[in-house]
Image (cartoon, rainbow, N blue to C red):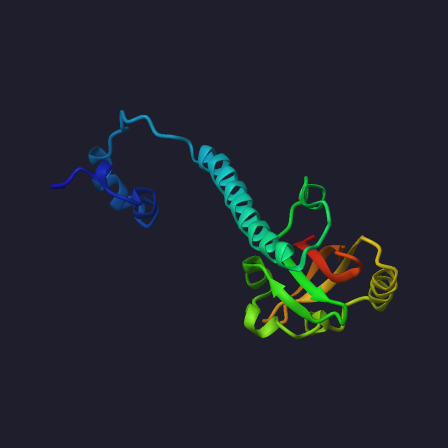
Length: 187
């Protein structure tokens, strides 16, 4: 062969497609490389680290955007306590009537719905046949008492795929509770 096979990308795929006879014809052209390669397992470690860093950046961006709203509405909550050691995929802000007022970018990633679609709707559009009525009743009861809580329920993405969603809801207070913040993540 005119070219060095060891410089060929996807050599393993090429070699696996050859018959035994074809392989024997080129076997002499294949030499063990003296290049030290990094095992693919190390990429997994890096990939996990990169994914964690990306999630942290998305969360920081969402928190920063939310804090601008908090300043506007003069909520008195302790933000450090609200967000400390909390992992979330999306932030959802609702008013007293349970209508969505704002969502973070992660909401679209998690559900497939745009923020434009979600604004002024209740989270009911995320629910479906597998959503447990008892969980919804507990949520309604805790909201009526202005209690922070965490629940897991089945929601549905825009493409109708069900997913378990863990929501941690915090009443937002200035002189009284005016809104609710939900930290949501796939469970």
